Length: 257
Image 1 (tube, rainbow, N blue to C red):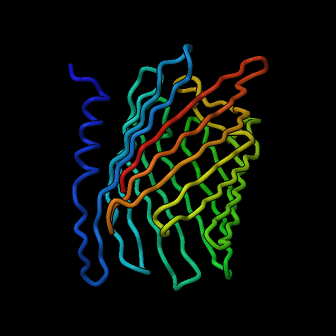
Image 2 (cartoon, rainbow, N blue to C red):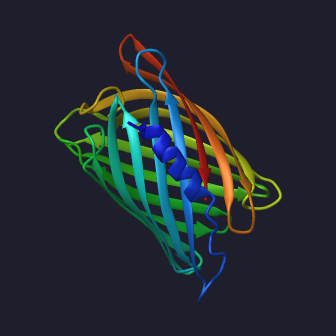
């Protein structure tokens, strides 16, 4: 039997190098995108893999639709998630993100939906939103962010508060991102760091837990032509799952868009 990873890696590579149409009709643009990530969890767990393929349909200053299929492998089990990410623009200073996804797998929420509203004020961007993941008991995440452009740099601080219904699980998570733009807005290096609590299925299938984590990572995005770009990200996670149990997780991701 052909392995999960070989089949989808081939599909990712084929999709990634399909040329975008590069043409616009009333500013309507269609282009494929794809990504693959590999996560090492040491000797205790088998590696995780996630492969995502999708399309971007965008109309300048109006909307951007991103349907995608995510194929995941965790805990020696496979799962599939169908997702629709959409952005709606209201003039130059307001836009909204609406997310809807459905998952099939013991380590995935059956349904996820969310909404976030963004506002631009001079060189700053502010946002506030809410997202809910449907596990046996739903997990609700409230988020807010503040970003700023300063010359060739972009800084962003994002704060999330997560809680699970009918349980004591709750906590804050803080994430900071910094980008340095190089020759254009499509070529940049970035650094990321995070600290706080996360509620998710991260240790074994069908078990929602609260984890104390710290992470940091770097990435680089490079334009291939006027329509396509490629990039990579690496992230290290230090997770305290319960008292006396520490886990190190390392992830590398490559993406084409």
